[in-house]
Image 1: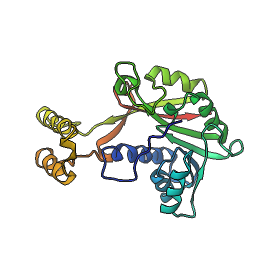
Image 2: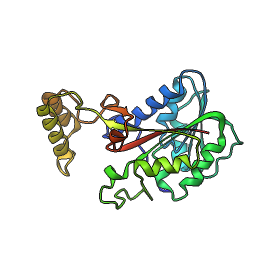
Image 3: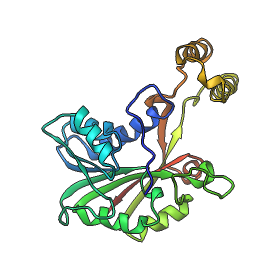
Length: 250
C-alpha cells in the first residue's frame, strides 16, 4: 500500500477538506467518550483532533517514520500512536467503538480484506467511517490518475463493495461548496482565479500575494478552509462530488 499523506500544515490546498472530514466524523460519533482507531492516520493531526474533543484514540499508520513523527509532536493521555497494518490489526474482535479511515482503501488491492478487518474490530453497535475518491471526478477518463491509487470507484460500485461487508451503509458526498449561493459572476471569477493560481509557475508566487488577490476579489483566502465544504446526501449530488464519505455498521 503506497502512501499519500496530508501534511500537518494548515497552509496548503488540501487542509480544509481533510479537517472537514474529521469534524464531520466527530459530529456523527458524538461527544460521549469513544474508543477510536484512526487507521492510516498519516501525520496524526486527525487523531489528535479526536482525542482533543474527549475520545480515546489509537492513531495507526503502516509507516514507522510517520508514527515517530506523530509521537514526537502530539502528547495526550487519551492518545497513542502505533505502527499498524490495516490488513492485520493487532486487536481482538469488537475492541473499538469506531474505526475512522480516510483516503485509505483506494491504496490497496486488498481493500475487501481491509474492510473485513475494520468490521472485525468494531463492537456490535460500533461504526466504520471512511472516505475514498469518486473515480468519475478524480479519473474521468476511467484510467486512475493518482499514482498512489490502485483503484477508485463510482457511487454504485462503492455502495456494493461496502454492502458486501456491512449490514448498514450510508454514503454521502463531500462537496466543495465555496461558491454556493454566490452570484454567477463571483462564481466564474473565483473559479477562474483559482485555476490561474494553481497553474505551474503561477502557483510558486508567495501565498500571501495569492491570498491578497483572492480576498480583494471574492473575500476568500486562496486555499479552501473547512467552511468551504459540506456533505450532500442525494445520489445525483453525491455522484458529482470529488470524495465519498461513508458510515458503515455491522
